[in-house]
Amino acid sequence: MLDRDGWAGVVLIGIFICGFYLASNLPHPPAAELGSGFFPRLLFLVLGVCGVTLLIQSVRRKDKIPLPKVNWRQVVPMAALILMYAGLLSPLGFRAATFLFLILSLLILGVRKAVYLISIPVAVSLGLHWIFVNAFRVVLP
Image (cartoon, rainbow, N blue to C red; front, side, top):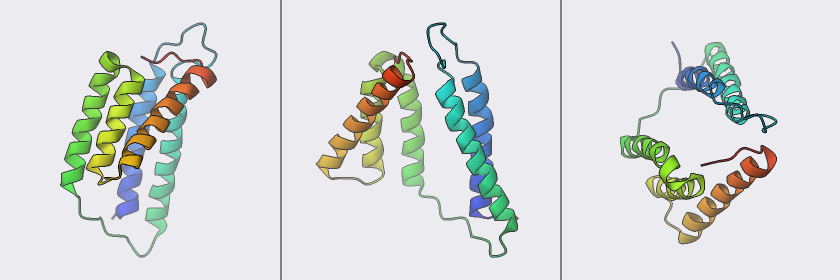
């Protein structure tokens, strides 16, 4: 029987399989050195390794960790927000959609300090945009 970490490992392995497959089908522009699928495939590979590690640790563990109670008041809005984010990437662009996604995510997770609600989304959205454009040479929407 799997415990909390085992089920987390199974979910991460599933995300790895689906995400790696989808990222492998991203177009590879001739001007880009690494291509638009390199970074997502790398992240999904890391998730897959983490998932396998969690699954192995869970199977070897004698004292199983029980599954926690699910906070549906956070899970359902976050799932809806992820879908909304995916739908808004093209019309709003990466920076604006990511900024909005992060503010709403922080609110759903209980963050209420204005300094965090502004500084974290600004830093993450601008920082990720800079990394993709300058380091990976990938044009974002």
